[in-house]
Amino acid sequence: MTTWNPDATRRTGPAAKTGYPFDTTNEALGAVVHSAEGYFGPAMDILDGPKPVSWHFFVTGHGQLFQHSPLEAVTWHAGLEANLRYVGIECEGVAGSPLGDSQLRALQALLLWLKATRGWPSLSRGVTLFEHNEFMATACPSGRIPWGDLAEAKPAPATFKPGELDYLRGSADQEEAEAVGRSAAWQKVLHMVDTAAQTHSTILLVGESGTGKEILARRVHRRSPRASQEAARPSQASSEYGSCSVIRW
Image (cartoon, rainbow, N blue to C red; front, side):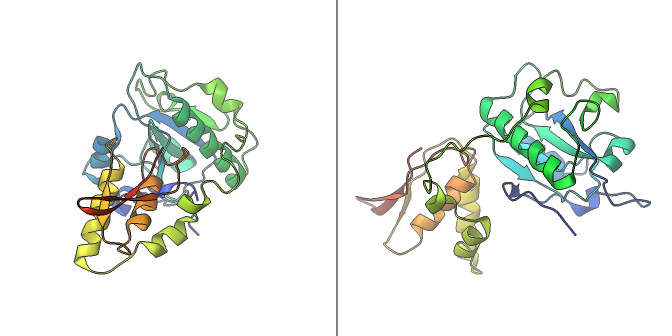
């Protein structure tokens, strides 16, 4: 069995950077929360590269959650003991920069999900919540983790009006079903959309009516750092280049 967080974007890391010859199953008895000491792009380069480092989750500064390995995988994030027993969570940012509000809420929600999924007795320092420097000689997590807020985490109240995000978000499975295709041209479009979604730039989708602008607009929202924020339903407009699809945050 493999366990994936339903609210996380699955961005799978190399299977070769998980497990040991003598053990491939993580007990997931708690979590080690790290400071990534960097940002999403370079962190993904490290994850995909030859350096023997991997982790389960990455929480961006804007509160978007990525999962790279199932909970049951042994990732290489804090030394042998921690790797075999605990989930590795990387938080985007560097020493001296506290977690942002959206990032903290996403981390709290992840820990509550882990607690419920794995049956942890509590969210407590030294019991289910750990720092990297408790297992290895390192400055990580550089004093960035507000442990009091995490230990007292409670389910967040709904911040959106009923049904407000249903149109844009739907289920992940539904979104993927709408935005699939086998042609090289369509795969190139999806790659461009996913890359653009990670930026903070304005994105304008232009094309003839019925070519899928609304589908791509929903995909941009779900895969952007603002996925947890309110967004209006994509609206149609016209320009000298043709019809356009617009999302407002």
